[in-house]
Amino acid sequence: MQTLVKSVFKYGKGIKLINEAGEEYIDGVSGTFNLSLGYDHPHVVGKLQEQIGNLSHMSSTFTEPYVTEVLDQLLEYAPQGIDSGWMRDITGSTANECAVKIAQKYTGADDVVSVFMSHHGQTQFTTGLSGNAFRRKAFPNASAANHLHVPPPYCYRCHYKLTYPGCGFQCVEAIADHIEYGSSGTAACMIIEPILGNGGNIIPPEGYFRQLRKLCDEHGMLLISDEVQTGIGRTGYMFASELFGMQPDIITLAKGLGGIGIPIAAVLMQSRLNVLEKHEHSFTSGSNLVSLAAAKATMDVVSQPGFLDEVKLKGEILGSLLNELPMKYRCIGDVRGIGLMWGLEIVDEEGAPDVRRANAIIDAAFSDQQLILRGSRYGFGNVVKVRPALIATDDELVEIVERLSSVLAKVG
Ligand code: PMP
Image (tube, rainbow, N blue to C red; front, side, top):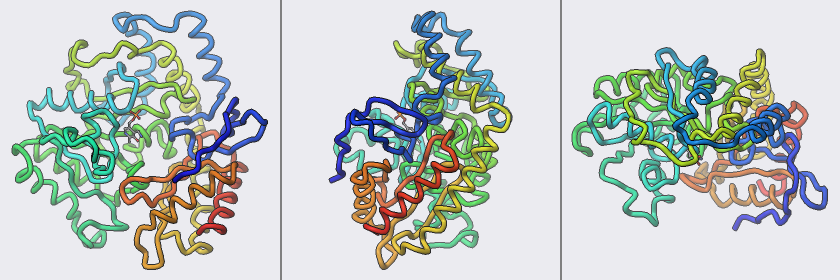
């Protein structure tokens, strides 16, 4: 059992949380990977205060000018052809549902393809869509017939026991078979995270997304890039789709878009796909003005000249520090990451996934009352994640890795 931090946290400062006793905890995972700008970014806090002072909410019938401002900021960075958006969602889960609804309405097809170990949300629909049998176990109805789960691009433990690049992208080849034999024969879309976040920081090999694009075109499917974790600068690029040269039809965003944890989501798409009527996907609290102010303020910061370059540099520092750890601790089988999105794959003496040890590392970090880490208890559940806020200083990155190293020395 994971030890819960007993503290009641009262304040957040940068990437630190402070409890009632005034003790500081360093947050190596930016909340749930969503506090892209830390706990108290002054620009975001200021804009929120201003917005609350003016008007905190009104019916989404009237919010279009506010939505347009944020969309304009986002679309400036979107891959070519993506020039339109929908912002009535509060969570990544429903943003993904929105994307699938668009694909289904546009193509007239029903089936949706996703990969094992993916995570696309926790609504009934996205629980079924996610390739995580563990989370689905108690909800048999979530596994709708139109969800097709296919092997992920997980080269470290290839489903087919093949090696890249000689594998010929068997994991993509197999998708066509799944569609032909496992579905109604047509699929509306494939949804995939550019880096599988909860599944274990899995980074697809070079060329994977080109293959996927080709496959989608051949089968008349839309390609949805779930950037709920990877979006808004997490990889050093505004969108990881850009980093991988992925050409998605739709991008979904949430988490980091709210800057300091304010709930907000977005769906970006090519304008030909803007097919939903307002009554087909809308929520009471959607297009909330405070949330939109947070998104706008976050985009102000992340789009400042040089900000993303800084994240790339910080990513190199973090990556090189983390890559030193396997030389000291044999329980680290693989270190994977880009920008400020990293994962350590914990293995046993035979190289098999070691979930027990991964959990022990996470528990020890909690007990240390300093380092807050989160692991993937799902999928193989053996990947410890390091994903600090984008505003973490170089010194804080060093501190995170030093503390992780001392935990590994005890438990690894
Ligand atoms: N997609 C991805 C890639 C995610 O990581 C998550 C949340 N962990 C979601 C979708 C769901 O987002 P939310 O929790 O905001 O519904």
